[in-house]
Image 1 (tube, helix red, strand yellow):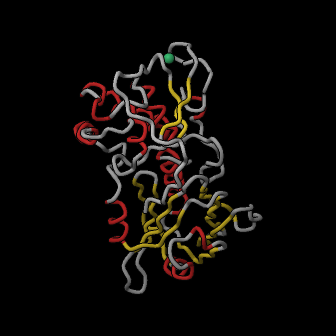
Image 2 (cartoon, protein in one colour; image 1 turned 180 degrees about the horizontal axis):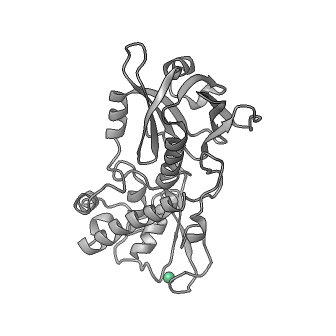
Length: 295
Ligand SMILES: [Zn+2]
């Protein structure tokens, strides 16, 4: 699932390639991935130029200039599990699961939105609507201060793994980078956030930032479907220390990496480097609960 580093990579790619270009026409092939009526979506975006790109957490907003006296608006993208934003020449054949085509001018390229599992959503919104949606998210993970981070852990008695995934606490982490950050900080995933000492919280805060920064520098991680806008996979997979490495030797101590299910999510950790604290959160049911889109 695309997390902050993958979305950041897509945003940087778009910044280089589409800033200043006009969305000449928008074609929705599958209205399921559009929030609201597809016709309004297409009409709202068409004939506007790309004025800027913004990201908060795992969501990406393309700012579009005003037209005919109307104010600017945003195309908000949430890539869900398998969403891909690809910039491609218009003459290339459509790949299966292409749901939206956005034709660009000048030139003969288009942005295509592909999504095999269709959990992603595209929405046309005003700047006010965008702020309302983004206000529901916690601080963007690379921006959060140490004090804010520590404060957010107080009175939280679930597992720190679920806490890291909660976008209202901290926006940007998903399963991959949450596991990697906990390993780097040497914190057991079932630790209760409220019981983290100031020193442990500081280590985790630093680990979150470091892991995200390293992943952004390597254009993200590709497990299943993530690709950048040119169709290239991310390069961070080889650097993963615990994620999806169950049974393989820990890169720090050599003992096998273990897997646990916490809140329905696979969790990978080293029981030696991340010792279990005396009091831990009780893992919630391992039943996978369908997660609602977060905007
Ligand atoms: Zn270890």
